[in-house]
Amino acid sequence: MADLTPDLTNFEQRKLTVEQVAHLFSVSNPTVRRWVKKGLLPEPEKYGSQTTRWDGAKIKEVFDQRSA
Image 1 (cartoon, rainbow, N blue to C red):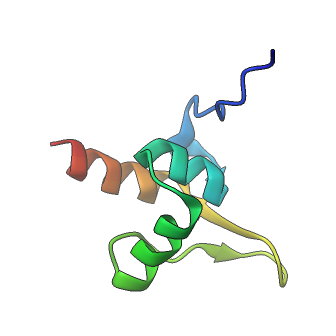
Image 2: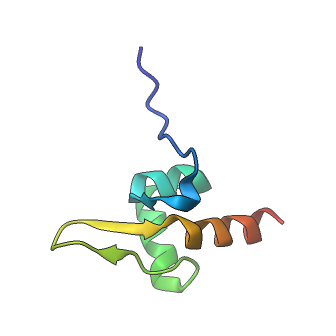
């Protein structure tokens, strides 16, 4: 069976999907979106009407703060 774990190698140098951000924090996709609304995560970048990505470097900063 294929491994469905997102590849997060060098994630701080990439643009991340909601699924990748959720996996990184071990939460659901809706939780990622709630955290953005609460200001706990940065706003994603919009690429068209249905595509959003998070700056991996900004997510790494949040992840490192939460892990400390």
